[in-house]
Length: 422
Image: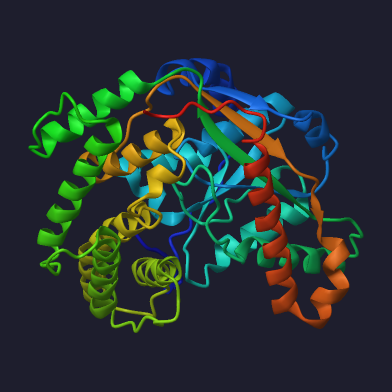
């Protein structure tokens, strides 16, 4: 539904509607949620991170975690409970439509608000600036922009977090508020608390059954998962009417399939993708274009014209699934597992195929999520350079944020005894 005021179209912005009673109830029930729905997931904040976080009490802070898992918001919500605070969250507009709008209602009352990626979402930008300048609550923004499904590494970050934070700093200077705005790098690392080889086998059994693959009794887990990967790849090639060359290596087949999916979408949206851009950059260009069209500002139009627009928007929404598919396999290549076949990486890879085949993935067992917080980045230290060269400074801050998170992800593996899959 579009919102209209005095005949002028507005983006369908979903503001935060923080409801103290519901937030209190959610925090009360959080242990049950982690125990039952998240199968015994535990949180461990390392290196006195909670104490250092509490030093930011009352300070304007944008929390910037990596986003490898669909349960990241639950983990950050748990951090809010541990710290005795509550956070606001920025989320992509389309997630508010999930579950026939129920997801959006819940998110808004827990303090989330929407942003339409790739569009001049003025209401969202205004809300972000207002929340940072007001400083009543900390704000959570995932700078990768979407779930990476990469527990060990970080996708290239969007520059939007730094840009919007500097906009808030500009507004503070106009209001003569001489206080800092901090960006807080946070690393989340998911591990399993026990040997999950039995659960991994069950997951592969389930995939083999739905892909009509013969159940293997002698093959290794790696061999069986590779067979699953080949079956999924072949099915997708058939779906997108692509016939690979004979004996074409798997990595080339994957690259070709990703390119075909992106070309189909770009042709439909009449967008020319820059060939020199990475696959992820091309995905972001197309996702932004989808967002901009579906939730765009519409010029004054008749009811019939708006109806036509909604019909087209409904038809192209299916492209979100195609783009999710590309992202799902963007980090997969032949040899990915043999590089470092920990049970976490193996489970993460199975998650990708479960998401493709079943539309969702399963938690393989009780997890321990390590949360590491770095020293906050004070944007006042970049103010002078920002005034002289905004674009370069925004990129500099984004690069530093990425480097800090990547370093912490590596550190979280140091000294930890990994369990490897046979």
